[in-house]
Structures are given as C-alpha cells and as structure tokens.
Length: 358
Image 1 (cartoon, rainbow, N blue to C red):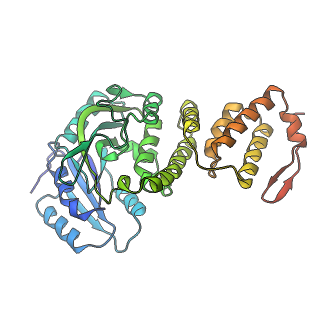
Image 2: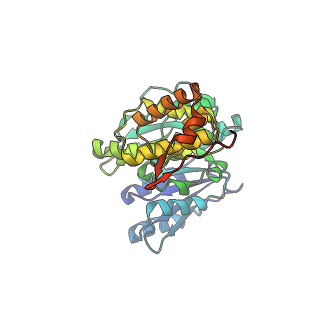
Image 3: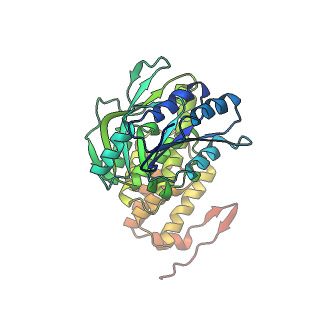
C-alpha cells in the first residue's frame, strides 16, 4: 500500500475514453517520482471491466479514487464533475489513451518553485503510435524542435505564442495551479466539443503567466479513435466553429486585456473563412454599428465587440464594418446616421433615436 506522509498536493484528473489503454495511464500516474498526488477517475458509462481493473489498483494504492455514474450524463458533464472534485493546490488532466513521463510532476513542482508567479507549466508532448513508437512532437505546434524560448511568459507574449502555433494544446503535458480552474468556468465550454482542451488552454494563457520547458512531460497516443485522425475536411469544418467559440469566450472575459482581444481580431482576419454574409448577419451587423454610435463607443470598442457576437459575422463583413465605421467617424456622421438611419431587427423597423447629447 502506498502511504503519503506529507499530504496530497496534486490531483491527476483522468478521463476514461479508451478502456483498453486505461491501465497504462493509471500506472504512469502511480509511478511518478513525486508521490504527493491523487488520481481521480470518474467512469461515465458503467463498465464491469473498468471497475474491476480500478478496484484492484485501489487495494494497493489509496491515492487512486474511482467513481461511476449511475447513468451516462455526457462526456462534458462527467468531466465537470471530475474537476469539481479537485481540492489540491495543483492539478493536471490526462486522457486514458495517453501516459506521463515518471518525473513529470517532480519537474513541474520544481518549475513552480522557480517561477512562483506562473499559473501553469507547459512541457513537451511526444506523439506516439499504439506500439509506443515516436511519430512526431506536439500534435498542433509548428513542429519546431524547441519552443521559441524557455522560461516565464506573460499573458500577452504567451498568448501570441499560441496564436503562432508555438505551444501544444493537448493538456496532458500541462500542470496547472487550482486558481486556473477557479477562474475559468469549464461549464462554458459545452459548445466546443473536442476542442475543449484547446479552449481551456488558450483562455488560461490569455489570463495568466505560465512557464515553458523543453522537458518531455507526456505522450499522446495516436490511433483510429483519436479526433485528430478523423476525416480532415469534416474536422476542419468543426474546428472552424470551435475556433469561433474559443475567441468569443475570451473576448467576453473582462480580465483579458484589450490588447489580446485586438490581437485575436487581427489573427482571425488573416484566416480563410467559409461563412458568407446573409440577411440576418447583415441586419445584426448594422444594428451593432448603430448601437456603438448611439452609445458613444470608440472604434476600438467596436472592434472588440465584434468578437462577442455569438452569431459570428463572416470576415468580409467584419472588414467592411471596420472600414465603414472608420469613414463615418472620420466625417463625423455618427449623429446624423443615428437620427436618420432605419435599421430592421426581428422583422420590425426601429425608428432613429435623437442623440441624447444634441
């Protein structure tokens, strides 16, 4: 029986998706050289095989904690329950088809000691096949042999690195302080689907400083059930939607700097978009312009507001709105347009309002 003398300090949140690989993931947590951890497992679908496997481990290691839902509550809700059970100062997230290097948590704790302002640590993640052979490095990084630089990043520089594809967004190679999950509600990510890991990491990077190291922390198993191995075209269409949701959530966060929000806007404008302007989109666009002029908001505030619209505009329309707004402000036509512009919304004509400061 494993006995912890100094109390638990770190929780490993283990997601059950691929039962055949679960044992390897659990053992990679149990064999850590940093021992003050617990391993939280919550099985969303009742499985005698999984229960028996975990019960046998619990008998020899009390750090492993297993719960089973009475019914399938969905992967997202199951994961939220898991996160709510994190009571330790630090935590990490590991899918059951991946596994950790044995010094992963020891190295993380050393880096947190060295950089007390950091809220999470980013390790290298090795991509492997089912035989354990190395395929490549970070799944979604720019495939550099190293990160741009090592050490502490502030939120502005660090978030820019994520937009450049410099860092992985597979969370198995991350260790977080609990403040991160306390500040960012994972419950908001239900619309993101498989992109939830990327959404969570990007949002955390937009809020908090973090540390980057070249040490390998985790191994990502690539197999036929992995979402990144699915049909590329279908995945790209879903990814575009997830990307939009990712940016909307960050833009809605009052604790994220305006500089980051504007950088998001510039970044997203450069990406090829598949959505085309439609009647509803155009009506919402002109209503947004009218509202900003009427309320004396700045051009910068309008640009940020574009990120907050859930029915996201196509980028040709966004570019048009930004140019139009610049011209209207240059010629000081806001008051005139607020008086005489008629905008349709919800099938009704909204009469122009006289500007309150006239």
